[in-house]
Amino acid sequence: MREFQDRVLRGPPPLGPGAPAVERLEAFIEALSRFTATHLDAVVVASAAPGHRRSPAFGFLLLHTRLLVRELDPQLDDGIVAQLLLGALSAPIVVDARTARIDIDAVVASALALLRGLTGSHRDADAARDAT
Image 1 (cartoon, one colour):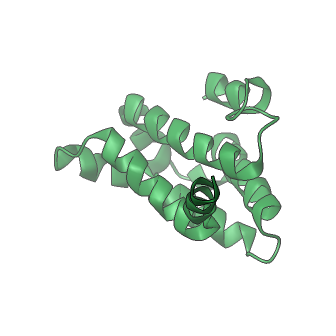
Image 2 (spheres, rainbow, N blue to C red):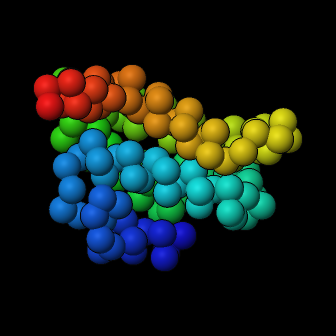
């Protein structure tokens, strides 16, 4: 998790600083999905631990997501939206996908679809493509 956090805080964009919030959040969602899938056993154990939602690791994920959501749209309740996004990437979701033999790429695509529904970023990209 420390390596993941370092990539988020100091790595190259779009996961690291320097990219627009929507690009950073999309990169974060994808990277966190893949991190969860790669380290699923450890994530399941950590998620089940008492006080998990007060742990420094979860606090980092929540704070980072809240800040990006707030930057995207200050009218949104960043705390609720961040928890919804992180919930979509939680260990039980990835476990269920793996049990159903759903590839992590499909989980990533679904999480990004959820995010894009919130941000409208796919509509912005479609509009930019149509304008050219």
